[in-house]
Amino acid sequence: MHQGVALVSAAPRPAPHLVILHGDTLPPGHERIDADPRLASVRYATADRLAEALPGAQALFVWDLFSTAVAAAWPKADALRWVHAATAGVDNLMFPALVDSDVVVTNSRGVFDRPMAEYVLGLVLSFAKDFPGSHDLQRDRVWRHRETEPIAGRRALVIGTGPIGRAIAAQLAAAGMTVEAAGRTARTDPDLGDVVEASLDSTGPDLGDALPRADYVVVAAPLTDQTRGLISTRALSLMKPTARLINVARGSIVDEDALVRALRDGAVAGAALDVFETEPLPESSPLWDLPGVIISPHMSGDIVGWRSELVRLFTDNLDRFLNGEDPRNIVDKRRGYVSGP
Image 1 (spheres, rainbow, N blue to C red):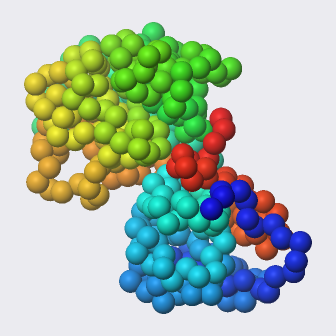
Image 2 (cartoon, rainbow, N blue to C red):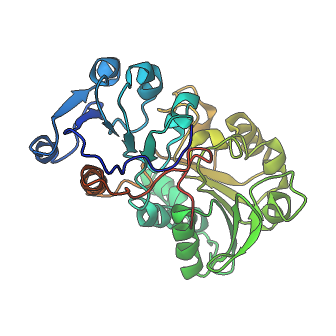
């Protein structure tokens, strides 16, 4: 089936049914969605009840942020035209039946860009200024003077050239760092300069050229077939022993076992990880105890008010859907993300 926008129709349609897939919490201000007279109904469903809610529904709002329930319930989606994800990454929705359908998928691109860029800058500063070390010494009441590293003039490689990667690159450049970028293809970008291919097997400029130059490697790419396992044993071996890895994208882009080995062997100096292959990160993971590792629970884009911003974006797209207009942030389902800068 084609992947064009299938929301606009010249013929009038009956009032649609909307399903909201949620976890422990409902979207803030959901009462206003319930009261929209243009909707025939709003059905709320947790993952285990989604299959019961989908028949006859034309729209689905995936508020349960990283749920995989849509794939399991998909055979019951007999009237669905639009799925909106309250996330930037939509890898959990890119299963073959949905990709091959005419159902339009949109995401929450734009909500997390600046917060994640600020978070990455904070992590770079934390490494360079040894804030974790200061915290540990304070806890133990130890007065120990140290020298710290500058960030001005240091090199950062940002893997991912979408809005999040661009915001990170701009933030780090504003702090005085030299920034390179890696994307789906090697090219010259008006904002990022020369972009290398996010691959280790390219015939042109790729990560094999850029990784050895980087003091900080920042992963900000969507999870796709191209990026899964991208930060491998080979990639880590190309990094400087003094370099740090920062991952704010998806855990499966980094080979965690390879990273553990690299950290233990001193092949890389540290890692700041906000995302993991399994979340929550199991207590048995060696990453908890390795020196030079900063762990956070998938929160790099979550600032005060972020949930309300997600709902605002959804309701704007809901208006477009109900008015027969094209929505914002249409995902290229073959690529797994919104195309364009």
